[in-house]
Length: 277
Image (cartoon, rainbow, N blue to C red):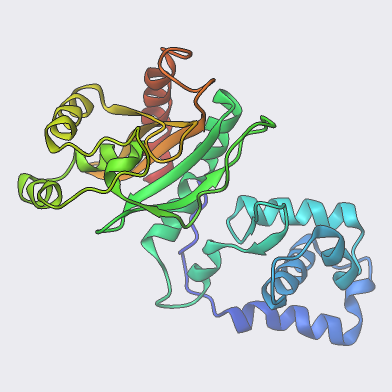
């Protein structure tokens, strides 16, 4: 696992060497190291006013497109850059760890679990998402898209009512009685006819979720989209996040894939502890 916070680094210091090299023309010399080139690519991405393509990164840095693509992939693995839904390159959340006092626990968690999301999409063929309890809604920190041509939109940054999505229901199962009673005492809005809003049915569902440690949803937020979620716990056993798979209901359901939830639970349990420790 990569640890980003060993010593705070100022981003101005980080890029100053690259700027000096650009000014002196050293970027065109063969002696420039891969680290220098990576800093140059990172500088271009951060300086851009909007997400940028690999071809344009190559043009602005003077690097071959293949080299720029390889460096972007390495930076993406570290969380320093990330891909948008249309495959453009944007600054990544791990950049926050380069400035004192700017570290975000949720950003670090997303970077720590990125390899797990990637493994889940490769293993199960569906989009994988990471979400956390954001007090008044479930917040999706990120996703890794599967390669299936029939898929769903990127949910990164989306906030949804807990009772409408599988990771939200699993999150509710970890609440104390007071918080749960407060939440269920208010009117719960449905998203469509499949939404479950009856407090008694929700309580029954939460009881099952605590026993099985996974939750399926059937088109309860978006018609035609199903989800299945499991939890990520800290060493004390407390829920810190949820990981979910979601995709078209015709191929992602307990009827079509009866073993999927248990397989997902076993894989996440095996991998998450090592990635978040």
